[in-house]
Length: 466
Ligand code: FAD
Ligand code: NAD
Image (cartoon, rainbow, N blue to C red; front, side, top):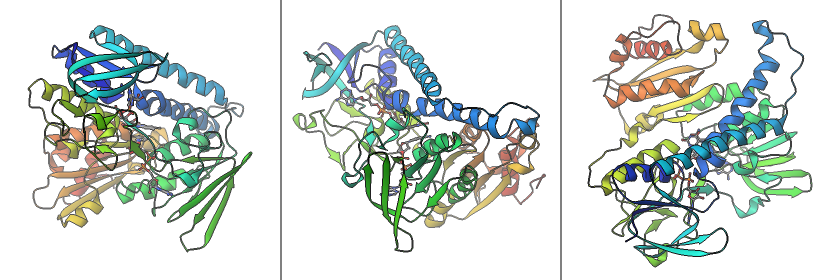
């Protein structure tokens, strides 16, 4: 065999699995159908969306918050093409970083579409049309996901778009209609609302980010509403049409009445589907379930010995850090080790402002399961640090077992929630109680004090500052 391990797909799952396999002494190749490495996350996902979120946030603060801090400037002008150019530069820097890591770890990179010939042979159709086959002992499928889009949505990539096009628009929309108020809708809707677009959300469920703790969706809606956005909840889209420069969304509204919304762009973000197109899984008989590759829970091996799968293409949260954990896990399993992933403690973050971050069970899940719990909340507006900066929207909610006081879930909406959640994940990984967090000294004044106060509130309602 030419290689010990061949990884198909170079997203955060694939490239991390390749590096860890190389660290464990394996001869590794990685195949990527695009010209650049890094997958969805680096090229059209996590990193470019955060670059635009950061630029639009600077713009919004300059336009709306600088004056209250005593900074007087002329009304700022948003230059979208400069923002997109900067975003592209950020992505290119990180692409170069992954190339460097591949070289450093002596991983062979093939650019082309990888497909199975048999379980030990992978054909690569390169970008110039030429073909090459390589042989390997083991394979990791890390081919990720693509946006879900339904035929009646008439996706044309120009006016009716997915997140991929939304990261490269030629202009700031006048009226952006966002179908799906989930994670992508909240983030990219925020980008364009901050830059001055009118944004209307059309959501099937009854709140924003409906899979997270309900309080988070309610609070986020209040903050996003301040950007001048509109919402249609319990509304099912039935058709989207583009007539040149105008887009019309037809839907069945909450009260059963038909809804018709007109805008100049429509962003469809209703979830993503596992991507296995072109892999020729049939040649080896790898099983799938509703499009996702089926894996053994303890090993991430598919039903075919020696073929493993990780990341968005398998069950579970479609998150970069989940894919990365699985990348390390699978490499270690393949090397004969016995690693572990605690799927219950994979945090979820929405990079709006304020940010939303969550780990563990939601209040709704605890109620459904009949778990006896205590809840403690603390609002950011009662926090010295938040008042000083002017970021007073949001709260921290700690959920703990009623009898043992073990922390079961932490949900934060507020400034820097994305970073704050790490303390909760660490505490829960060590099975801390709410009392443990409440007794730990937290520097003053910091946002993290809100977690301590919420933990105090969860233990005998003894928060100090509320
Ligand atoms: P991917 O990153 O999708 O990579 C798969 C790669 O495989 C792709 O490069 C693809 O071209 C390649 N490939 C597919 N088939 C073949 C083949 N046959 N041969 C060769 N190559 C192939 N997650 C977060 O945790 N935080 C965030 O902030 C975040 N933001 C996001 C923002 C947006 C707009 C989007 C769309 C997603 C975001 N995500 C975020 C989700 C995150 O991008 C994914 O969970 C993550 O990229 C999954 O990693 P992966 O390695 O499984 O697959
Ligand atoms: P999502 O599942 O977060 O949200 C989709 C939303 O669309 C849901 O609220 C759903 O109720 C709604 N919906 C579904 N069908 C609909 C319809 N026909 N009409 C109206 N609404 C409808 O999915 P997404 O926002 O597309 O993101 C896809 C994936 O990418 C997510 O799984 C997420 O984990 C990942 N992602 C993560 C981040 C992050 O970690 N910050 C950012 C972006 C994307």
